Image 1: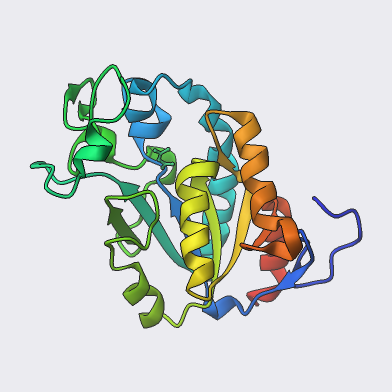
Image 2 (image 1 turned 90 degrees about the vertical axis):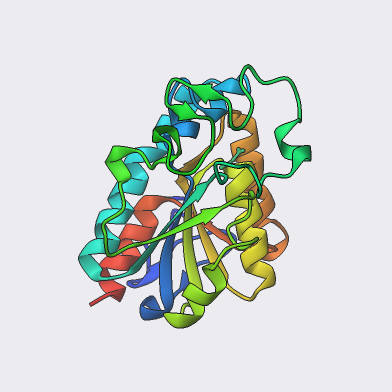
Length: 232
Ligand code: C5J
């Protein structure tokens, strides 16, 4: 745990300070745990990244996902990707850089970052249940051009437990969007990962700095400990 003090029952030992959440108003938001980011041959690797760096987030997310399912917490998964005709993919995104394959090109897991292709799907270890919400997003943030706000309002959600990949890109963008919309975000530190370990560290620091300018950061053990008490 991040804080050495004995946790108060139901309170998440978080940084910059402990936080107590109203659990019925809390959702688990899992960002982009897709084969395209996690596995060789996908979007992440075409950008030159070592995808093995992301594997460390899978088990911590799995543990919190299990607890969320056991306690009936709303679970939301996101997937970054584009329509097959690329009508929702800005040319500035598609044309950028010098990847080995561009968005829409055929790859070993189907067309890169295209909805419906094998690479776009969520990894088997964290596969959504039919009852869970899946948000398809064309951007890095989960609020841009999606129905996420409507979903959160429908379920009366005020707080988000956020995890997924990558820490400094889609997790950070989503947390910043959520913070501006008034949601309390607790980012699960070991449930996030980056291709660049130093960006992961810095991405978490940016969230919790300045009194938690974008939100709170806690590890999965601290979140699980608090959930044990608070959901009963
Ligand atoms: C990226 C993401 N890194 N899910 N997407 O392009 O963070």
